[in-house]
Length: 620
Image 1 (cartoon, rainbow, N blue to C red):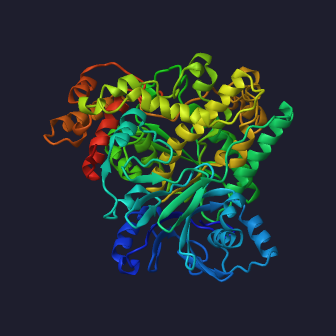
Image 2 (cartoon, rainbow, N blue to C red; image 1 turned 120 degrees about the vertical axis):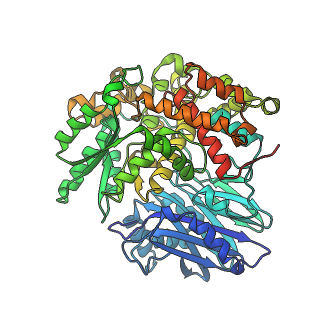
Image 3 (cartoon, rainbow, N blue to C red; image 1 turned 90 degrees about the vertical axis):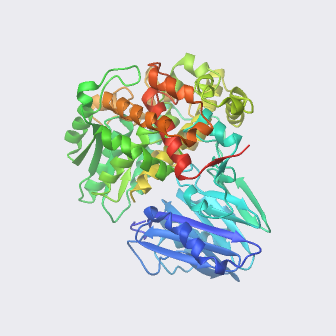
């Protein structure tokens, strides 16, 4: 990641352990796995081969190109360590200074070495020292064990599959699927995740039968044929003693510090700007920091052809974005860039979005972001985005509407009965749809730590925050990582600083909803950095097309699926339900208001393409 402390970004990591084969003979397989991650790091590659461990890395290198190459190796205390690392540390200078004071001598200026030296010095507890977004693997040559770790919030991905005699891991599912011992199979749990929870995923689950994901804030060892992962960080309930004024001041301090740390860069940097509160806040704070450096901020917005003609007000989206974007453009005096998407490109990119995510996803919300990131990458290499503020500050309608809040189940997916109708009868007999979803929901709320003195409202709000962090937010972070990395664009998410999550978990709802206004705490804390019309604008979701041509396009695409004699999606989905979807004008919220009838069609188009391209077999 190109930073003033010599970091690197746009990385892909992959590797394998085998206790019986000599992996030095598996270079061709390793390079196939590496090649799938080329878009994550298009400029430089490296591999490590040893009898029991093989690892590969792809990256864009900007500083310290030779000394900072990965895989990176050091010897300390009689052990040799080799790392592959994807991510960025935001407290690199502090960690480096601390390690140097404890006698560590550095050979490079990159944060990769800071992570590796931290591990050699502190062992697995090093992750507790790290503030950043990361996924990494360290092989200990003498101990013959592999350490895996992922950042607290889960911004950077890390998948794995246990195979006979070993383990395969990688930044994306596609890398694992190159290995001959990782089957391209889904069982009834995979079908249930796709049909009943998709585009969400059960935490730690990779949909394919043997693929798993290291959960956020987890780390552990693979050694002697066994993998043992454990959490190293959790949200803990504590009494909040700060006054509202003190809380607002602390929120301001945390967010300002997160933005400043994440703007450290020697390459062009910009921000997403939707005209909503979160992206506008980040843009304003970023502009202040860059002005101090004598630089101008680049901001980026997306719109859709003819949205001005077809936009209709709704409860969820009472106002359209362009007027607010223009207000921010005037306020900041920034260099602003518009991207306007049209239906044909949006529909066609549904397929590329599957290539990026390795699964059916958030359909046009994914494909539009993929196209948008491609345009941003023409101007800058790093961009800041406002994801996850709503999850932490309680901005979504399901936090604020008392009736929705009381509903038993995932608030954004109250569609289980409708979804279950799509299952083929023989699958429906084996999958208890309500129980599958309800069990996932109840496991999550039971894990929300509470205080005995919590009121019913505060207790529910802790549950809601846990639900959002473990589920909805992970879907958005998946989307942001894959769609941006597909275009070799690094996106940073300052609201995902774990210190903000820790603090907000214990802030009472009365403060978050100050004066009965959504995200009232955040707005009050930052009220002098935005024009009033943007500061107090009602929440507006990620922009989507309102053009009726999109419905026509995805209808035609779904009809082509049904016309194909061997459509793989029909192995799990009832034909008559897809035909009904085409003919009926009934609109059900599949995944919040982001996915209604056009998006449901697109989801099944993506599912069919995914099953065909990835040669998915259904096994029960």
